[in-house]
Every structure is written in structure tokens, then in C-alpha cells.
Image (tube, rainbow, N blue to C red; front, side, top):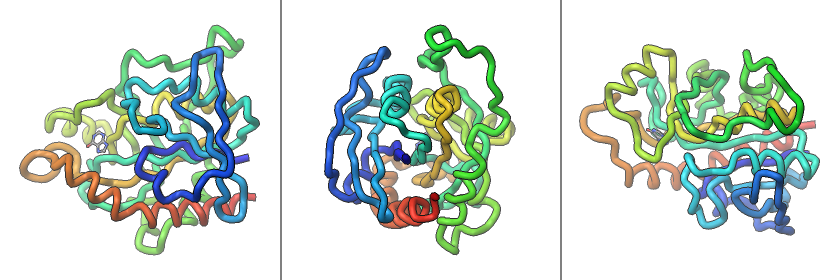
Length: 243
Ligand code: HPA
């Protein structure tokens, strides 16, 4: 069974839910109800990580409760969506990217189930599930079927502020192509919970200092809105391709 963990904007284009499931977990309440929708001819569960009203900022999301609730529901795969800034100048506004690596720059987030469930170390060489990533790559539109969209390293920042130009220069030197605030610890918690996890990213702005001037925050909402149906199309094709 598949779940989508999304941001707020995508909710407006997803099919209306048939069912809303409210869950509690040993870690507290998830961001909101799990919505059951029909997508690509299948039943899929959707969770807005920012809450149904979009009220929870990335650094305040209860990632552990979200992953725990999905696991308890029997979810085996998660496709996460995330809006990002483009560090790689080849990634223009509106680009869809399936990342294959992560660098975690966040701090102070509850980032593990270790200590309650008995797990010690686990492999995280490839932070995204290879098969699920392949499906997302196949589902990308033709215009995004080249290497810069089919791979990429996502740098995760704490937020809620965007970065300084110097920080982005450093992330670039570290090998990051994209920057966002949400995929960690979501991806590593999914790995701990043995849920296959991959992500689809939408570039909504050039990251700080990549272009002259400041980041136009208002424009990110405009870019997001324009790209929503393309994003939804990729998700629908991916669900169809998933066995
Ligand atoms: N930085 C961090 N998070 C983001 C950005 C960005 O430039 N764009 C969208 N989410």
C-alpha cells in the first residue's frame, strides 16, 4: 500500500478523499488525518506533512508520528513531494527532479525511533529506495528525462528562513543540487520503519545567490501553482506503474 506525503499546495489538485483516518501514536499526533483517495486506479493514502491547514512549518513537523501512523496503517511505500530551491543552475523554476542523495543540515529534530524499537545502526548509503525512484523517473515527463532531473543531491536545511548566499555556495561545494527543508528526518525514519521511500521535487526558485538579487518568496507560490497538474500527473503515472 502506497502513501503520499505532500506539501500543502498539492492537496488542491488531488482527488477528493473517500475517507479521513485520524490516528494517534506513541510520539503524539501526526500532522493531520490520513486521506484515502483514488489515484491511478488505486487506493492511496495522503498525508500533508504541514497539516490540513498548512499550519505546521517544516522544523515543527512531527516526522516520527507521521511515519509511525503510516506504518501502523500498513503502508509499505511512501512517495514524498517537496518544493525546493535549485542550486544547480541547470534546474530552472518548474523543473521536476527525483533526488538520489541527501545531506542533512538540520538540527534539533526528533530524528529516530531508536531507543523504543530496538534498532541500532542501519545502512543509509542510498537514502531513497532504488525501485521506487526508478518508477518516479519513468513517470517524469519527456522534458525532464535527462540526468540533471533523474538524479540530484537534496540538502536539507532547518528553516523556516531561506539560506544566505554563502550557505548556498557552501552547499554547492558539498555537492548539493537542491535545497529544501523537509526530506529529513522523514527519509531516515522511513528507512528505520522499513518503508520504501522516494521523493519527487519541484524547483520553485533559484536558491539564494544563484541569480542576482534576493529570492522572490511570493513567486515561489506562483511557480508551485503552475506546476501542480504536472506534479499530479507524475504521481498518477507512478501509481499506475507501481505493482
Ligand atoms: N531553500 C529552502 N527551502 C526551500 C527553498 C529554498 O530556496 N525553496 C523552496 N523550499
